Image (cartoon, rainbow, N blue to C red; front, side, top):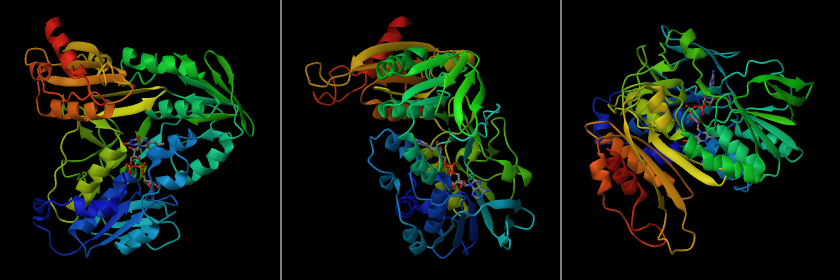
Length: 463
Ligand SMILES: Cc1cc2nc3c(=O)[nH]c(=O)nc-3n(C[C@H](O)[C@H](O)[C@H](O)COP(=O)(O)OP(=O)(O)OC[C@H]3O[C@@H](n4cnc5c(N)ncnc54)[C@H](O)[C@@H]3O)c2cc1C
């Protein structure tokens, strides 16, 4: 994901280089997927340009996405998550300043301030300060034993702690919450999940999509507490329990998986404008409200391709792609970032869930008119060993029948369908197109009847 070096060769199109002239100095604040993507792409258009990346962390080139799977023991070690050596960045001319916090931006002077050091000047600035987990905002938030999953070095330390944890409470069934619940359960830890919402990932997934996940958690021994409010972390100096509106849960550890909020304090203090989601406002070249200042990743908001709503805090792959656009344009190029359709997918419990753009619950909540069809299909030929059920739900615009969203639950083949359906939404594919789509039939990998086509046929029949 954060493979900026490989990105150098892959990111460029000839049109990106229109107007590129003298080599500027670019400063990037942030060493995550956005910042590293930006630095690599900038060097792609400006091999002689100077790029300095500041990060608060000890490392830059690693995939945080793999951390829950090391905790769950599916991946043997954290070392596998590192994508490039520090030397590789040096060789590519990317100057990464580790464990260095940028204290302030001066957009008029064109400098960034670092405590105890001289200000660093820039010709172009890229803000890629990412996300923070929303502050639980309850008493006891400063106790030992509250784990915010992000920095790989801290994750390595927490992994050792997990060996002695008997009972853990995961705070909120967000996407990361689902991954951490599954990881802790795999690890044999008694795991509770609390959420004030009514089911797992209810901001995104429909209840019938989340249900198989929850059933499989029950099989794994997970205790779910929905419609329950977090009131306090109890103990001292270490956490002993989590106080909720439904009573106290004993806990050796609380994993904080609250909503991702954009980390914009540095930029807003300097005057960068934010939008309704709280993320920085950027145009389609990732330019902020200030001259020569770009932003990318989880600190920005971008338009959803269906309905044009601003969305924020998407994924590492979005952050990386936005970083490339910011880096190319900071280097004088002309790359545009397209509206997003947000294909998503993940493993949770014994299932894979996924989708694109709107699900039924969100569409209803936002009052988006839609027609819908669902079907339960299979992932391989019915006689092939390992065949799994696969449920697909499709949402389309009434009248035109253009696809506006989808959700799925199965045990394989979710990612490919989510990617395909995102392109289908983007390109205006209709239920009629999908109902009679061609599909691969090969016993080990695909059934005669494609579940997407079955869902589209059912949607048409419902009309
Ligand atoms: C546990 C976990 C699992 C994930 N799983 C997935 C997944 O399965 N799929 C997926 O696509 N994505 C996944 N992600 C990615 C994630 O959800 C984000 O979308 C992604 O990390 C955003 O990248 P970013 O570069 O915008 O910000 P971040 O990753 O938040 O990076 C922000 C950077 O800014 C730096 N920074 C902030 N403020 C300052 C400052 N003042 N001075 C200096 N440096 C500063 C930080 O040190 C950091 O380097 C996961 C992330 C985590 C943590």
